[in-house]
Image: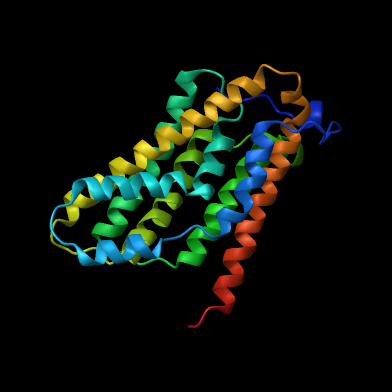
Length: 242
């Protein structure tokens, strides 16, 4: 099940006055999004401990997802036009399957990825989903991409983003697998908490006439945030020391 396109109905209705809470939240997310990374305090703590430490890793996983505005922006786009919990569960499960798989394998197999490139792709996923919600692909190419497949594929890239951050922790090999599983549990807890807040806000917004009036604007802002993420990461890639 896929959302209705808003391109035809709302393309000319970009009124920005009386912006609703979701729009404000998107604007507020722009600054923290480009600063998303590993907190030095957390990194130092992880480097000092060894053995099985389940609760600290659960906490770090939840914190990482709750403050991972690039991941949350993509989730916001995924659920934007999903009205039934069954459909929300399907798409969120596909996203969780994707990012859990590459996160666990990436760390366990020590697959090093360039953080700037991965984060730029994550920004691209935000742009992709915003354009999808705006009905751009149907207007431009006359086709609708498989949204479930796209959610899973971009979930895989989001997982590499998570694994890159975990590798930056320099986690001790002693107790790595249990700690990694605990981190993943924390990520899913953080995702559920964040998604609950998003769905509650969306539920209130959808009951107002402003939802369709501002839906196109919201996705335009989300697309802009994605381009900001891409530009920031690519700039870091080209100016960072080799």
